[in-house]
Image 1 (cartoon, rainbow, N blue to C red):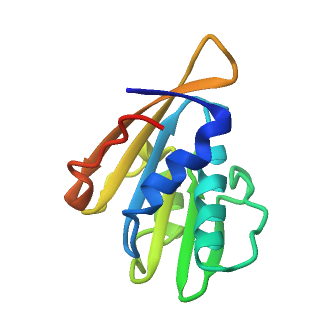
Image 2 (spheres, rainbow, N blue to C red):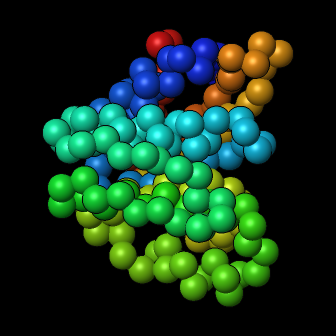
Image 3 (cartoon, helix red, strand yellow):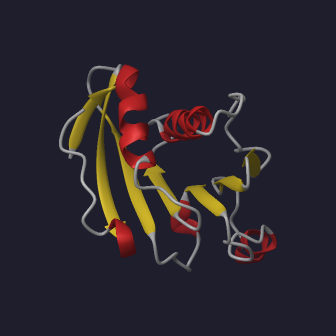
Length: 151
């Protein structure tokens, strides 16, 4: 478990970005407002900066369900499954159809049954201090031994 200040989210994003590659998937767990979209915004903006692409607004896809970001030849698909209840609705999003040159980020992934081989699961937790959070990392495939000890 890693405790951090919200102001340090970019340091966490950079550490994850250093291992991130096309076809990877990040599952984001946590209560509403716990930091899932804040982390995603930081990660996408860090990826854009690394690739010398203009930073874009990264919004919560709660009502749109998905936002797509092009970073040169790479695509980042940011899904939010919070409002979906029916498996058919989730299947219609096509999350698993094209994973080539696509980084997939899914908020509320507990609503899907299929998993990606190379995925990092991040669970965000509130702290008493509203400017702090804790997170837990669980990796699969190439992410199995990934750790962030300190930032």
